Image (cartoon, rainbow, N blue to C red; front, side, top):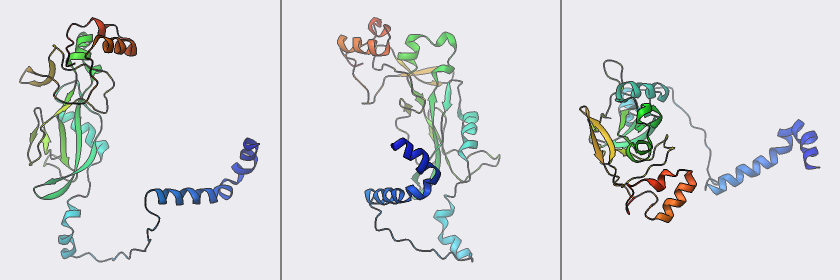
Length: 241
């Protein structure tokens, strides 16, 4: 009966039949978010704009977004990808206090895309122990361009270099938008951190997040879960892994 009622009564008259339920839903949602007593008023927008009004609204004008993320993402990739295996997977909008002013910025992290490594480099050790993380980010104000029409980068390069007082104390990106593969850190295998002048800089994971693989039983469980027998065979695991 319910499906018959839905098909032959509700669907042909959906708005009329469901209006009351929509009102209940909206009312309950407003209550849940503490918005039950919001007062709605008309805002009388004035038609005049004076230089004094513009001066008073400096903070707003400085944060009007001109850069579209769809244009900014490939631009970041072109000028700051730096290596073929790095990718900017998304551009987000954030806000920071810069030189005492609240500024809206575009920001994207530089992730390591393992699928872009050369085929000969995609060994088990490299994919799960060596190439474990991306590095650094790009940050630029949402409304500034250089003389050549490019974004004015406030944070750029590897290692990160900032032109404004914004610190990036931990630039390694272990958890990103393209993180799909499992990696093991704090093993006897050093991790690739970032490239520098034709050489590689190495590191060990310094974070606290992650699941300990500090016993044979856990290694067996992870080997079963991932269907990866190499987890049991690897010699580089330690009690800190």
